Each structure stands twice: as C-alpha cells, then as structure tokens.
Length: 131
View (tube, rainbow, N blue to C red):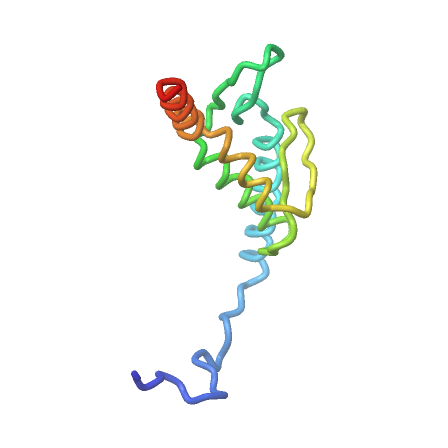
C-alpha cells in the first residue's frame, strides 16, 4: 500500500484557498449571472432538443444527444448541486419541470437519441424477419 502524502488530520492546503480581491469577485459574479441567463435561454429553445412534432414524427434537435444530456445535467448541478434524487426535465414548451426520478428521465432522454431510435429499427426489422 502506498504511503499517504499527508498525515491523517493535517490539511494538504493549510493556508486554504487564496482570497480573491473584491473587483475580481464582482466580475466573476456578474459573469455567473450572464451564464445562468444564457443557460435558461438555451433550455427554453425547443429546436435544440429531440422531440416529436404534432404528427408524432421524430424531429432531431440541433444539439447532439450527448450535448442535450450534458446541458440538462449541468443545469441540474448548478440549480440543485449534485443530488441523486432530483432531475430537471425540459418539456419543450419553454418551461423547466422538476421530478424526483433522474434514472427514468435519463432513460426517457436516451430512448429518444438518434442512435437508440436507429437501434430500435434494426431490432424491429430482425423481429419481422424472424416471423
């Protein structure tokens, strides 16, 4: 077993995080507000996300499936911290809804990814061939 770098109970950074000067802190905070507004704008843009149109046809969003999940996960982390029991869902009507089943939400999102839809078509074709 390797020898630990620090003794138990002793901080590896005894001086703590360096203090920011007030001007730098204010600049970071103002940019944070801009980032939150931009993320909210992105979450409100239905055309970015995979969805079904009024005829029930699949419409691919402008963001890739991975980008969609990353954006939703980032929004969730920023809003609630990294919690296992909270999920944010985008309902494509410009609203954000909270639910308590992130596993089901991720499954719902992954089931709509283009790769998953293509995989499902292959499976269905094989089942048709077997009959």
